[in-house]
Image (cartoon, rainbow, N blue to C red):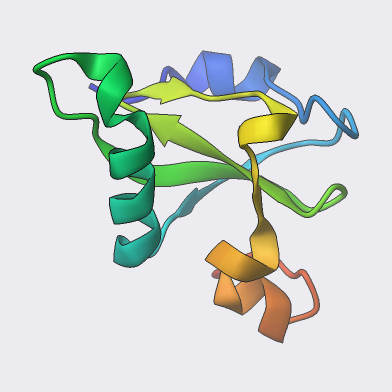
Length: 95
């Protein structure tokens, strides 16, 4: 199950109120996030493979088991998790 596309259209960055773009996350970042959220899932293993990137704030909000984590305190700095963003001067990956 994936995040509902209609929900994604409604979501904005809680910090800047800017638009969000769905982006894949590198495997090592996904592994760190799985470890971070594991305790909240009991016996279930959390799944992380994508995030929501805001160009305006430079933050990536992880999607954990199909639930966007839209807390600024849980967001990741885009240059640390999206090397393409840093190399391309914050341009969208794949753009």
